[in-house]
Image 1 (cartoon, helix red, strand yellow):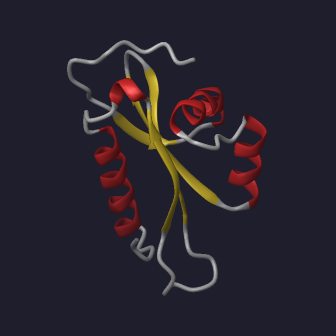
Image 2: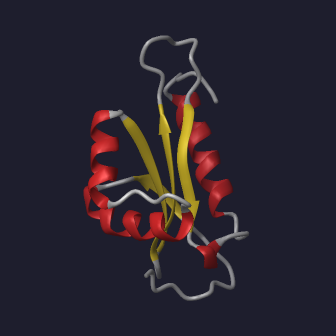
Length: 116
């Protein structure tokens, strides 16, 4: 399980997921999803389904949240769709999910992708 300390305040940095984040993503899946994906399922979904993943990390605890979304493939009229997301329980209600969503919206707007 994730070894994170209860934060008094959280300053999370959002960035694109890297392959080295897979173990942390797998742990987050276990504590945030009713039907968690294992590492192999994560890799398959990311590569075959063209999903985009943002992670939120803190300098002290590493990856503490994620947001997975899918960009439209067939039509620019289709919206960007959120597929999965989660925040480590100890970091909930600390603004991590809000930060992830805000960053995703900025990226969608910057790259002129259809919004959610």
